[in-house]
Length: 401
Image (tube, rainbow, N blue to C red; front, side, top):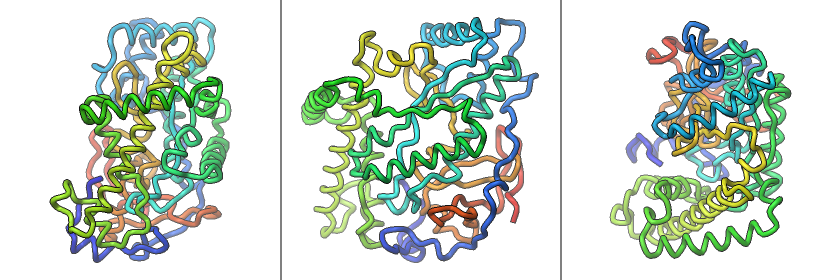
């Protein structure tokens, strides 16, 4: 992970309390949750939707709009587009909501105290769910049945990679379910469990172990690129997810910022190598699970397509052959579980996810906002006092002070 302060600033602002980053230097306020539950509005207006074409093509043009899609449409071949549009057309023929499915909502990355200090979902996850309603509202402008989203929550499937307990995963998932109820989306958003699909395959774990051994050999012989094109990024993400809560502040700075062993103080060389080994083990396990789930099944297209054959299988990360959408805003590189939510603007504002270290080291720019009756009693989001004009929404201004 990259941080944007020097060592002096880091040492000045970063204070750890029981393995979590202190936010004592920030102003704060407490509000009711209803204050940020604004009316759901479409992300497009009717004039921005392609006309003079078939209904499935119009709906596809909504998905392809820059306000909604993530990444480049070049990731999709003409055959991919035909498959998506045929599934949309099949739902239209039945006059049913268009079925969408994707994987999301694992757990908070609190093992790295610089990312977040929360264990439970916050405004990031809540606005992710609201984003699904906004996309649904956009489609409903021309197709009243709209969309039906199925989310395969991934917490239970991947918890053992980072050593997270089942109870913590359950608490996180229960909060996600409560958010769905709070925004009145039970008929539009359905929660399922990715681990449930794994359990349908009797020898799933054996296949994962076999694939893990294969990937390990590939890595030993050819490095990260021999495992997969995205493995280097996965490895980097896992390094930032290793448990660093017990390090002191100065060690934490060096372990996070050093790009190579040469830049590390000698007393941290062993610690860095342990972290790298842990990250590699986590990344290989994660990659093995993903590859197995994508190739097994009677169709050879993977567990999800086999079990949800009528659904448009989409993603929140750009990848070849899969349509991807922005789960928050075009301004957010990270996902809710990666960090903390920064609410920019008010009713016409947007959320982007940043690392907690970015907030703590600039206390004059941000305020911590708590929600009444929040079980965790930690900031539910942060807000920015002044912002530049947003390139897509045209928004300019700051959230209420």
